[in-house]
Image (cartoon, rainbow, N blue to C red):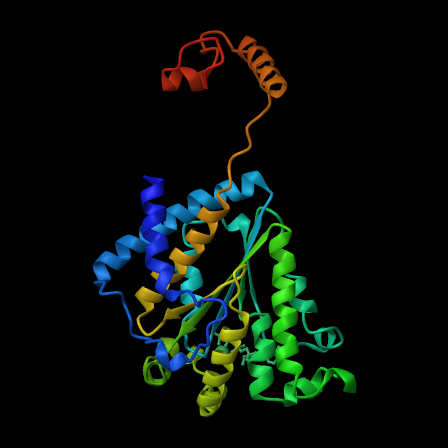
Length: 319
Ligand code: ATP
Ligand code: MG
């Protein structure tokens, strides 16, 4: 059963994965693509993904060996927040950390550019979600080079080759993380310009959404083409066999959420974490403790209330 679900998910996300080494032009990706799916079927698939995630996250935490980093990138109104909310709806909040990366602080700018991201990496057993990520360092920083001036790099670290160097450094960093038990997976929510316009207008039209509206976001829209180019180059250079990018069609929120859930579920399935099995001695110790606890049963109470309630036979090593 789990295997069937795993196969279905793997097949579903395959077309979204950016093949390492391929040249990406975002124009080739349709933000309205929905794999011929109806919304109703989609919701059912999302539920499958969410229950799988809950199951695998519990095992990831129990095994305490691997960690997962999910990076989410999108242009404004791309739906990052809603995606995180829906995809993570079934998991234990103790095992997940979400960090939103904004304009860097003075302290952050006083360090190398990966410093603030490194501080928020997952521990073993955890899933960390980056809402915006180290990829801002080759996106907004590239589109608005004044951000680079604020980073106060030495002369020798500047120049036209800086972006290729950053791609290499990011790939190397992710490789290092992967080699040490931390899986990195990256999702780009691919929104169309027209859908972004519609979402901005909705934020103006509906009073409940006014708080979400930002004039700065509309100003940023003027750089749409520059961003598309920066995204295309970044996807081409940093989708690696160890940390692939997935381009998720984002014009339909429900579809984007299914895709993101499926990508994360697939990642966990591949890690395949297991509950630790206790050794023979530890098992014998458990049984001895059980005998002690059974002897403490008050008058009239079953020796082992759990066993009694679940109809398990007395004594022995059954669980
Ligand atoms: P929301 O609007 O849904 O709250 P958001 O991610 O857009 O989410 P904002 O506070 O609106 O959050 O924007 C954060 C801003 O920080 C973005 O414009 C982003 O480009 C900018 N930013 C993130 N990382 C960097 C960076 N390294 N250098 C410069 N700007 C950055
Ligand atoms: Mg914003």
